[in-house]
Image 1 (tube, rainbow, N blue to C red):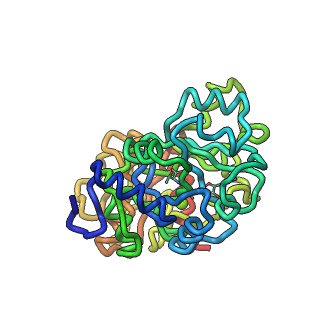
Image 2: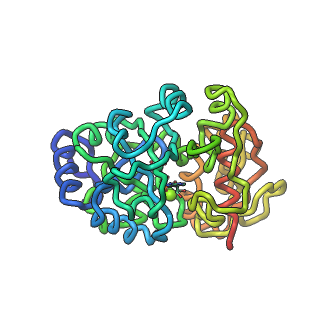
Image 3: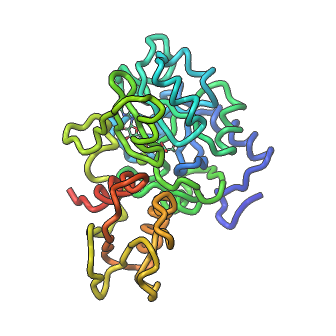
Length: 319
Ligand code: TXA
Ligand code: MG
């Protein structure tokens, strides 16, 4: 069934077949995941991958995450290790991406992995992407479905806003539950968090039973998604704000402000996971309402608050 937008489709068996047909032809579709919506293409196909880079206007050096149904599909592509096995068992399928050493015999397009000797692998949880992955015999390269450096999309309409009719097939899987991108952890050496997410450093330390590093404040760019300016709503963003000004939209936690025309609470009971899930949605809403600036109150640096702070810091960076 078609939605009101002619390229947004409700998922059904028929649409599953259509999706697979488009992917087999090395074309691109937009699929929902539990984190954010993605732009999916056959990871073995240079043709499909170059379409993704072109659509996103993404620098070629910034490698893509390769998405799999489960562990059985990854043996040809990467070298597994104990830390990976422990985290896979605990969190997958789910919102976490692992950087592993790539196998020489891997068929993943070099363009997808920026010619690196490592590969980012993820096992998404959303049932639509899982049913697609289950019914194809190649993995999917899938970056977030936004123009490079914009805010990631968390609904089919958001994807439409980014690409309009340039994508033939956008599958509507509802609002993405997690609402921010997966945690990225480098497991090629001593485990290191490259991008924080709702699976936190603390959650991972507990499973691995060791202290791990977070690379996210490091100036050296290890993961190109860590480019300082990223996740930008396209208007100035000010952090750690105490006093709402007259004109700006004001983002905060809790219920302190009654006038909700310019006040946007990310979570009424200050739940940081809920706040993360509302962040990008709120950025887009504020932009649509025509505000010219966003003030954000202090967000605690604990749990999912670490990922929120990472994203808003980049959103605030105009360099
Ligand atoms: O939640 C997600 O991970 C979403 C959904 C669609 O699955 N995808 C996503 O992809 O956020 P993307 O392309 O927007 O972000 C991928 C991040 C980038 O920061 C990229 O630099 C990093 O993963 N990355 C990919 N391969 C890497 C590698 N071999 N080494 C280090 N970082 C890598
Ligand atoms: Mg992205």
